[in-house]
Length: 353
Image 1 (tube, rainbow, N blue to C red):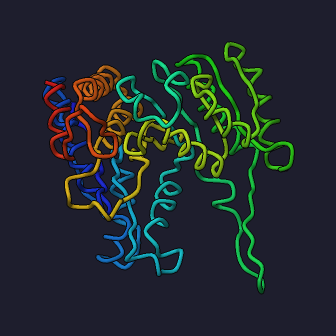
Image 2 (image 1 turned 45 degrees about the vertical axis):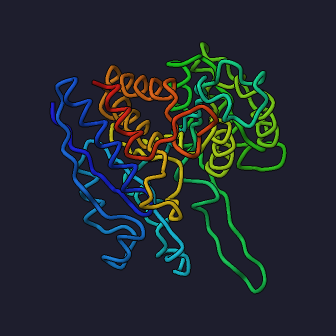
């Protein structure tokens, strides 16, 4: 079977980590009899330099005609002075909207081999943990009306029943495939949008009696993630809360360089990217951790292409590399083998074969 993948390397370390993810996908193809066609596209700062805009129309069309999209990272200090709508990050917001990707899946997994890299006491994370955020992606305060009036600035959060319901269903369905536990995070004690959020989640709850459902306020959720992340399985929340809390959980995995993500909508097309940024300070130095990009490729295999066995093979290869003591600088500890971006990718590919 041949699959067409739109590849957006992006800026900074993006091309380096995406290159390793492509190598892993090639090894999947060799092992399981698939073929992957990689089609490069521009987005972010490099697109601004080449075309004057962060998301060219050609990139949107290519992505829409592909089976999935693999993205590196966008942004960098050289573009920070541009107006907001012309900054690299505007391209990321726009591609999600253009492709109708309203739910962001962000796993946070602490591998047992990396417990020493977790900032929490070992007894709090003994055996590791495996949780996932379902973050609403195209609504909320990031997309609401905003502006300035004199010396006052404002940003508006708006949610509809439809927007909450569709991301809620993604979360409930995911919970059914995992541990049958779902926690919805909001600020229903003070925010009207959160009160609506909770009402809609409770109405969905009746449709999923097999899911152990709970509500939690966002500030309490931030504390509980530190007290004991293993209490969570699937967490569903709004755009801004999901952005903040998933980064917090990500640091508990040892490094943001371990965090994959998938942005999905109503069909099979999805956008897969590491959570980390473009890290221009280490770009081109063979120091970046490619694991987040590689695990994003595993999510691509599972979610968009329906290749569960292949996705598990990639994840197992990553675990084997970590168990064997291979570490990039962000997760290195005494007694481990320090490797660069390319060698870590090569080790994972070798574990695939």
